[in-house]
Image (tube, rainbow, N blue to C red; front, side):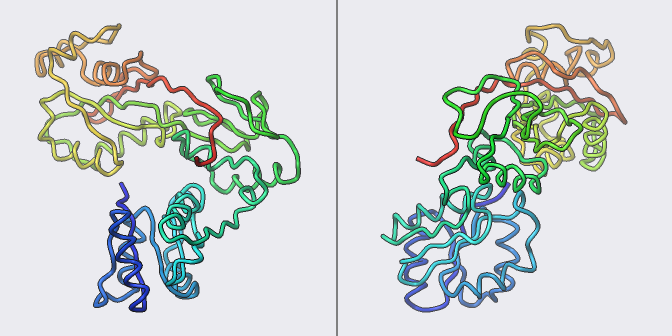
Length: 329
């Protein structure tokens, strides 16, 4: 899970502005004694956004060795020491760079310089819509195909399993044979897939199971059941596992909150679940993974118990309502 905003500046006036912005945004400011290359490497991996107050060339050269993809990179902003021009140079949509530039401009009285084509032309931005709807982009390289079609004035089709509230934006319509597919099931085909983060992973494991074992089982589970791992938003298990270091590390590595339930709470969960006398003799409840997923999500299971190497998983979906909101404000 990424941290907040990190700022750096290279002149006395720039550092004064950076200090003010760090206080207003709850961010951190690079110490003059820390080499810029070291700071950039650390903060690029850890933070949601980096703000360079100084020449754009410094920012570009600093971040260049660390670039991965628009789905993984943090937002990067470059601005002058007077706070007049605020330019998002990386991850304007998925990383929130354009929105952050607007916040910075409001604080400095400057101008956010937005260069993203869909923004400039007032067109629907599929990656910004995904971010607003809490969806992961499975193939970020396909964003440009969808955006290019819209910028040519052609209509795109979005296939979503649930109704989308509100009026569809211009040049966007719901339907099948889509340019964009909303699904946590991994489909075949060339559409851009957006993965809604709506699934709860119920987990059971033997005492002392390591994080690597859990990760290997999880990857196999997703592959066999056709689930995009990005769809998991949280995990749940029995309170007997509160001190399981491997399980805690496994969930933390994915940024999932982990909820614990007592045997009594799990046993009283409504719904039909598979039962194991052995599990009940050990834990006090006949099934941990299915019941934990169902009670945490508040919905029925979409994937029943999967067992591998002393690990069990199950999945339940939290109901999510979607709308066509994609612009800030």
